[in-house]
Image (cartoon, rainbow, N blue to C red):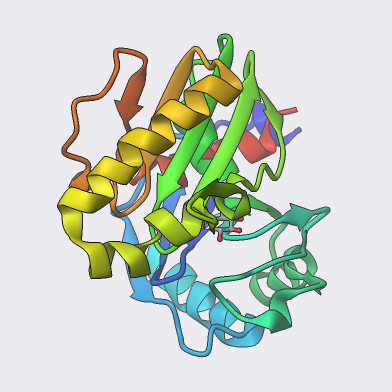
Length: 235
Ligand code: BGC
């Protein structure tokens, strides 16, 4: 079994709306390489993104298996939505295509789900949200994932979704102050809905969070998105 082999290396990949990131992890999920990043190609069509992952894999060195966090709903390795990439991803078998390309086993989950795995304590109800191009969300109960929670496209306020109110495109328009105000309201709304024990906030724009956070809310480093990749190979 692979889990018994201490030298197994996992290539962890995070596909985002603006960048594709990768690093190698050891069997325990510790980083073995520096995180590498390439811009997400435009248009972000499956074959072109796979080329980018292949380039990142080349510079990372030897690995035995691949974990991918994808910014949309993923079921059985197939991507079902991709609002911030390209419609060609709908119904695309990413796990099989990438596995053929890299010649290694590949597992794929939602990017926020993967980021959550990199952050949680596996106790109680834990919610992760990611602030980047899109608004990601992941829910865990005692470490068990409720997959593909799509809070980002759920109605939040003023007839808009969490993603429309808090996504990067909006942040660029409304600026940090207003965005932080909205984030406070979003946290209050999510707390009322989920009554979580912990909320983790990650993603590329988490660094722009300036509000004082409640004790059970924590900013997590962006690298959690890659560190969570090891969880895909746990039994
Ligand atoms: C997608 C989610 C994803 C999030 C962050 C949203 O637009 O629907 O699946 O987790 O963006 O990338």
